[in-house]
Length: 451
Image 1 (tube, rainbow, N blue to C red):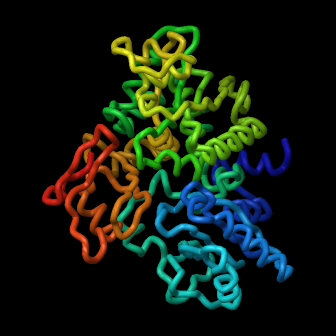
Image 2: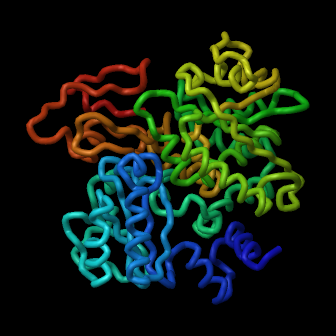
Image 3: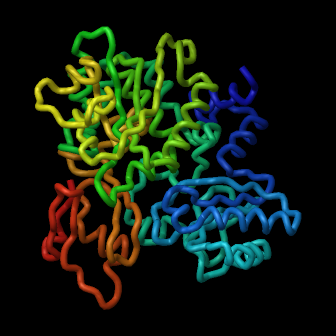
């Protein structure tokens, strides 16, 4: 095993404890704590691309070439502030990373000139990342002090917009795949099902069915083959939660899929994704390939005896294929139409075999639950519906984008305190919650808690 892979294995199993000084230095470079040259990261996810981030990327390349500057330029996902794109972040050696909004190509030169001369352009700055051991910028708020972020509880979106979604090294150095290794080395299939049941995790789409109970039904059904299907169809108009997770941190999703597949005794997993999600597809495919190369996918993963293959399947983008039985029909090559239940997919699904269908957000919660324990998950949200929920906010608000809040948070907190209301001269009349089958919530019911 190459030296870098040996270090990553240590990080995945034990974190930074037990590393020698040179290994610790390399781990800090993976985590972008210690950097040898300026690092510029640009949100190249869908929201950034729509706002012109690729033109910003070219302008940064041109800026560095004209001045013969050595920089590291990397892609990242969205921090959730879609209305502020193109968002870029700049980290100078020894300094905290600082984020800027609406950096179109014509603004690149002035922003970087100022920053390389230790001057922060106030009009464009969002805030700085809190990083231990790095010198903070004077008079610049930390991201976690800004109302948009301070009132959220980012558990599954924590790394979106911060890490490089193409870097397995950075994901592992930040604690990734520790939960999966713990799963396959410390727990039986049924024990993982029980841990998730104890956590109280409910599906983050559809009817909110208890995830662990769905898994147990599949695990307890005798079959020569079982399947895990990740529902990345996300067919509700205006919903971009799953897309943001896939584009910002695809390894987290794949780790969650791996844990779920193991729990039900499956060696085959599929990600059913709408074909329009081109950038999500690109990033997830790259992540799958890197996991195969590293040995975290395939046969006899890390000598555990566990085998797993994960494949992408593109769907036509039909709204109805977001329903699990219609999705399975499409996956089998048939017309995507819902079928009556029972039988439920957990006992007779894809190709007539036991099949668990979970959506992206549900699966992205699993590394945290297994890594930190079910009681940690229950610390947030109400007893009957613990954890957090991501919401896609659009319309005539002061900001638009994605927020992650504890279950039980009121609409008033989300709209008026986190995104700053509907702006001057406007009055909130109602919220439309959910997709075509959602409902209208009038302004006088804004104190309703979301569960």
